[in-house]
Image (cartoon, rainbow, N blue to C red; front, side, top):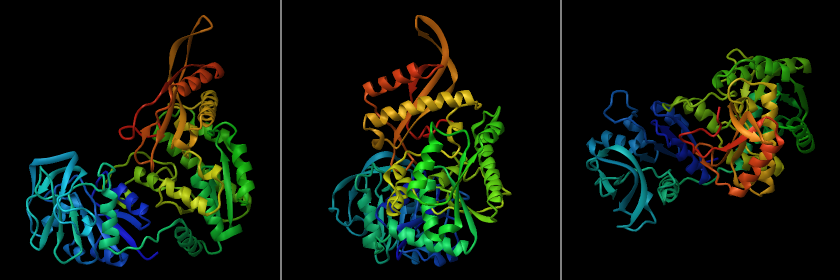
Length: 514
């Protein structure tokens, strides 16, 4: 890997989308907080630097800032707040009020060079704005590259240095040619090479894992989902028989999932697999607990206890635990690399782990998005039935039974969920959907079945489309498919008399219910 882009996060809700667009161009990148020191940035040796947007004004006390010398370390692209910081640092005026822009706008190209290579001078192009402050004029030594009806400066570049800035968010899909702008920065300005591929990632991680592990024994918490399966396959390629996978039946799995995972895993991966039956242990720990964050932490702590017990029974002193943690898990559990964005929820394999656990973590997929993980899995030779599976949360059905968890409610949910997925596959829609699942609601409703009054449970159905799990839209099922799913669940699952479909997007909702 010869090229790498450093994204410095100033708190924008879109920072992760910048990383997505850079990765899609096959250039490696990482997100780090704006507060990194100049020496740290030098040592990181970036091919280029992107300064993200953010909610602050550059003149606010405590607003993200940088050593001005960063502008001379590597080519720089300032986005929104990043542009305003460059303008302010270089002596231009940045003001608030009067010229706010939110949503779609037209940028007018005035200088078709640098990040605007391939555009025509005078061209109008749709962009996505989200700013209250604005740049009054370009700094000394810079030229204006774009304007809009509302603001005279929505883009500028240095006359001689590779410093570029845009007021809008090129990373957002509503910026029609945003990929061209980011691509121009990567390849025209930074001269980056598109050399970040699944194969290069695998080679890099194998070397890293071998250096970390040495001759130590490693265990992997296998769920059967694509994340843990790819993580296991990658670590196995690095260290071979030093790895033992442990699959825990928590009692929170889908219908026949333990049997399916055992069959698939033994057939295709050839890795030592230990199956632990711990249903009573998990359900006992969860008894009476209805807070979703508390449930996640209980499950995470119990997982570690089970792994420690299993490792002891194996007679080996395992030092490392492999987990299939992904980038969205990290982003939603705490801000990336300690940055200023907000925590959405605690993932059991991120924020829900015991602080005193004895294992050192190996998380080879921690910087990847879901589609990147799938591509790595394919490069490792995993079957499509593994890499194409919908995501399944680490805490399992415990977070899809809202409120306290009982064996009876879990059984009802399993049956409803199995019918739901069966009908989705039968309709040929499974691969069009990012994630689909049923939810057991802690409410009962009146119904009429067999000429009699019923007072029974409600099941909610959720299905979304997404590129990376960071945002999601509800899936528009054909009405006949939804009707067939509802009819089967009500007729075949005892105790359910009402089925509802969730038409919320993320944001403002999350994908899971909890």
